[in-house]
Structure formats: C-alpha cells, structure tokens
Length: 408
Ligand code: SAH
Image 1 (cartoon, rainbow, N blue to C red):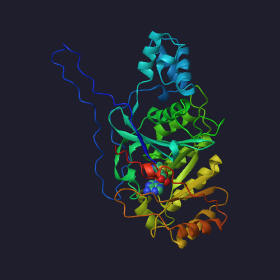
Image 2 (cartoon, rainbow, N blue to C red):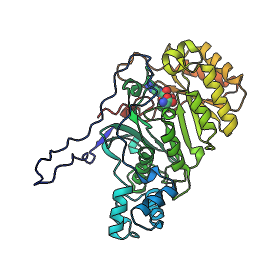
Image 3 (cartoon, rainbow, N blue to C red):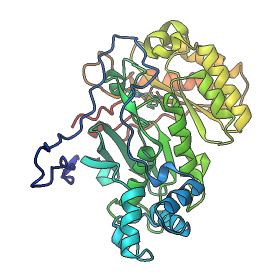
C-alpha cells in the first residue's frame, strides 16, 4: 500500500513591503538544473551555488557559544538551544520555555533557520517506511527515507542534490549533480526523522523499543565522499554526545561510496569509526568501468585495497554493495572472482551485501533470477565470506537503493 500525505506548502517568495515604491517582488529562488551529462561522464567538483543559511548544526559547541555571544546573548544560551534541537527534538520554538520570548526569537531566527520544507511524503510497509522529498532554500530537491523496524530505526540521508557519479543503473546518477548539501542540511534530515518518531507519527516499533534514530546510512542521493567536509561534519554532529550532537553510536553510521580512494584514506584517519560501504557491483575493471564510471580513475584493486586498509585502521568490517543485474554482473565466475579478490586480502574484514536490482525509469536492466542470486550468494559463502542479501524496502514508493530521483 502506498499513501500520499499532503505536506505543508513550500515557502512562498518574499514579497515587497507595501508602499515601498521601486521594489519588485522577488521570485522564489530556483537553483539551476544540473547540466546534462554524457554516459560515463563524471562530475567530481560540485557546481558553486549560493550557500544555505548557517544553522546550529553546522557549528561546534564553541562556535555556537561564539555565535550566541555575537548576538548579544549569554553563551549558556547556546547549550539550551542545542538541547532543544539535538536532544528534545523540539518542533515548535514556543516549547523552548527556558528561553525568554525575545531571546528565543532572536536565537531561532539566527541559528535555527528553516533549511528544508517537506514537499511530499510517501509511505509503505504499513507506514513504517516513509520517503520524504524536501525542498531546500534554493529550490533544490532531495529525499530521505525513514525505516522503522521492531527494534531499531534507520534513516537513509542524501549528501548531495543529485549525483555526479553517473552510474547507469541508478536513478539519482541519471539526473546529474545540482549541488553539495551543507552539514546542517544533512543533519536536519535526521532531526526531522527524530521529530516524527518522537511525535508518534511513525507506527511499527515494538512496545518499549527505542523511538530514536539509531542508524544513519549515507545511501540517499549523492556521493558522500565527493562532499567530504560537509559529510564528515555531519557524521560528527550525529555521533557527538548530546547536546553537541545526537549521540548516535559511530557503529550505527554507514558511509557508502563508489570508491573515491583518496577520500577513503582520509576518512580512515579521522578517528570516526563509521562503517564504510563500497559500491563495487563488479569484480573486474572491464565491467566496472561501465557500471561505476569512477572505476576509470580508481580500479577495482585500488578500491579494494583502500577498503581493506580502512577495515585495518578502524576495526570496522567493510560492506561490499553488489546490485545483482540479470546477465550483466551475476555470473558464477564473477562470484568466484569477487570471492577470490576479497579472500586474498584476508578474512574477517569484509561482508557482502548483494542487492536485487531495483527498477529505475528507462533502464534496460532488471534483477537477477532468484536461482542465479542464490548461486552467487552460495559461492561467496563457500569461501567463508559473510553475505546478507539487502532487503528492497521502499521499492513501491521508489524509495529503495538507486531509486531516489526527487521527482515531485
Ligand atoms: N554514491 C554512494 C551512495 C549511494 S548508496 C554509493 O554509490 O555508494 C546507494 C546504493 O544503492 C549504492 O550501493 C548504489 O550502487 C546502489 N544502487 C544504485 N542503483 C541501484 C538500483 N537500481 N538497484 C539496487 N541498488 C542500486
């Protein structure tokens, strides 16, 4: 079942004050659409765009105190505001009763600007999977997906509007890259999910089970490691204890990448033991060059070496993502080659997540036959490699892996 909920209207364009001659009404800002791309073309540097407004979640606790002081308020107000945002998940500033009204108005206007407005919300799985399309300050659209399981809640966040990696089987990749998100625009997707849970709007938790977000996966729109600084900032906000951040365990955070090798090496050195997922999809360069165009810059061997080193440095087992595409990458010999390439780098460092290919508009590809998928899995397991087939949650609402295109 798919339900569509009406969402609050998007903010309207600021209008000129009446009686101010010469002023014209400003149009709603609209970010230019991403430039069209040729098959295989990579966009590594995001187009330069107007920056989203600064937000509390962009700042460290010290920077928050400085910002509050600059507004003429006592620095302890920064902590109060942080508790409201990160810990109490306050929806309406009026509930911030420890802040005098005038102070509250000033601080909220300056440090808690509206970053994202819901445009549309779709759910399935009895309301426990919810995809939300967000409109950002400049009109750019992104999507996030909340998945509630009996004992845990996972939020899948976008790190860019669009994506420059151009993987031909992924809907986001086909749309091109509009812009990078800011740290706070990423964090706000998690905050919004937390507020929805807290308010009881999301069914499905076992009685007594946590109603907080415990897992965040950077598997929405975008290539997180191509927006490195904002993503690492967001990971810090997610994992820092309250009220600096949400206090989500780093082991509950997964950063997924096509394999930007230098950025994987840099992430390993951050002392942030998040899980790394590598979207491999082929064990040989010839096919991977086509399926994951970044492979023309960093080969399968280089990506696997970087993933192996990441596991060694952080102690976190790496996930290998492998969308199974019928007659394209699902051959028994490719399962064997993948198994050899992983085992040759050691044991216990890796885990494989085959994903039945999710349908995307205009794609000529389809998911593997179940029997072929089973054989692929069995061949990896025969080498002692742990394998978990990824569920296709959210498929009916185009909210599953590779389906996020933010078409409203
Ligand atoms: N750019 C990052 C983050 C996106 S994660 C990355 O590629 O890792 C989204 C995951 O879904 C990636 O593993 C991606 O390869 C996979 N995916 C993309 N399109 C898909 C599709 N049609 N079916 C199944 N998985 C898909």
